[in-house]
Image 1 (cartoon, rainbow, N blue to C red):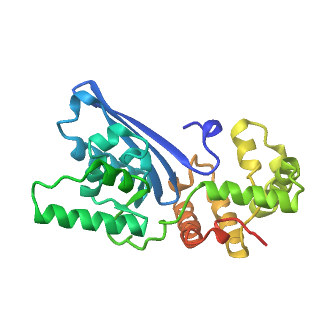
Image 2: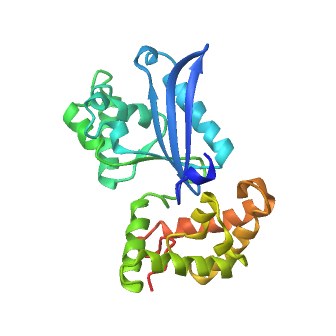
Image 3: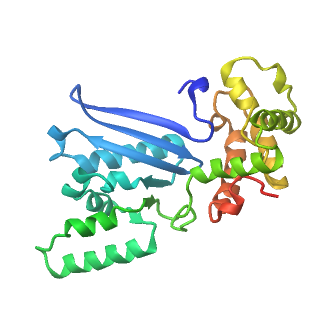
Length: 265
């Protein structure tokens, strides 16, 4: 994605899948640190074929390219307000691949349904139960990542935290907040952000808020310097190291929304 079209927090990646020159599916992913929200659709004609294998290969590719270790599924994908998803039993498609509900009550319901299926090979989960199961997010974590650190994370809470800070510290004035952020960026990265002119630089110059704690401040400083002329920090060893440090802070923040990157002092 060209820098000027990138989202402010999450990275967006999309894929169109072909087989023998024929498009068979598409995929989209929105990632922040090691977590990716994923959406997958296989065209009707090909749904009796290699759906699970193909989806697994795409997730593997995203893992290799981006380093993500946690994949999230939106409730719509598994049938929430989506009759097609209910009719196809989409919940069980993802469950068999290793996804789990993040809501403890839905996890208990899932285990109860699995026990019924184990006891009776002909049992099928009723549509009303599938609708309950589809009411929450599902996550897949790579081996060694089953810490549930991302279970309660919702990216919208970052925006809500920014709004609270803007109302409290800047009288609801977004321009004041952007100016403050630009000044912070000058200090943190030792640059003159006001001299940046193209769209991608402007996006970087005006982060939504200067809200890191002191330890995160130092990490951001290292992170910014790691670019060293590369297009993406993952392309440099120093960038990957700095990103790893920031990731660790973000994972801890995801456990509670009082500390989700943003300083609420």
